[in-house]
Image 1 (tube, rainbow, N blue to C red):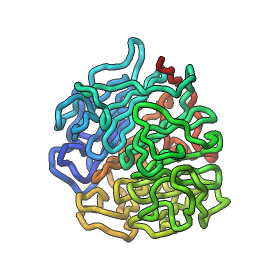
Image 2: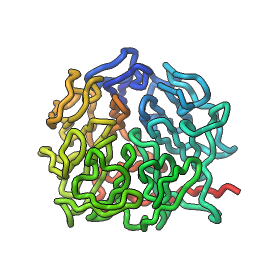
Image 3: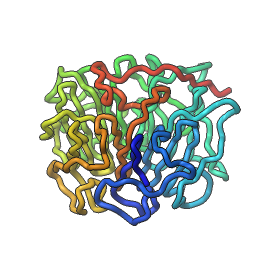
Image 4: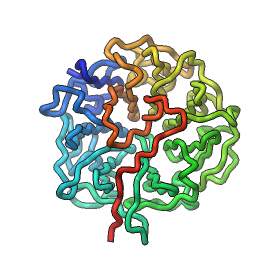
Length: 393
């Protein structure tokens, strides 16, 4: 089962590739997963869950990594087209090293190791056996200290923050890396012209990106669904400031879906723009503090401290967890799920058409970008500079 006194993993939505970790084709309510990695019965051992478009990765505290779902680009591992049960990824890190975090884009998986290496597989991995490749560090730099690694299932690009510098990697067809061009950057890190010391949070969407300083919002990439709002007037290839109705108020978190953006303020207000919201930033009608936000391809979920979920968007596969399959452009409140017993420590991960809620592990040795919300840190994301990335020679 997917629930124990010390941990839980709940899912809802599409499951055609078993990405929701259940034995049914799809579901419409959050309920415990029924497919687990071999030898895993106590879910307190689960350190991280990461969702791609149609694949899910689970990382255990001991560094073992498992994947399930669609594998058409080798985003889980190897050349098998689909894994309908959890597959244990063969060890590929150097002797004495260990995987400490995992992230998924739409069709890629990235891992970070204790020695500071970044490995990746999936789209644009041209090796015949589709094994994980080591990321190349920037030219002429012997080592970097990684503070944050950021991506999600809606994007095919990532950001790595190292001290005062921010780097982008991946797909860049609309300038979503913010590097001043539209050149892709697979397998290497390209410098973004922005002082990373000013960045409190950053998120990735489908061909766009949004970052926040203490009180200001910046965006780059496409704005076709007004996911950057009608107030965005900048050049799409670099991060440009967005005028917002909450200018001057402290920003706690930014979450991007495929075609929409959500911003949480320190005063607990949540504002949104884009598909299934509005064409400009509007305040969502949520009358309680929000402890987690998840955003999928065309939907979003806000988890209140009471355990209620506030949802909107596409729901043809039950990804909103409303116990039905009707889409909605109106923010809808769902009563607290009985299996979701500790809302304040619950994380939300969303794929293209499915959602996962799981109990956060208290282990602080890895990157947890939403940690600031969980611990109510008032000044943004803490800098976890305990990992280095070594340059490739």
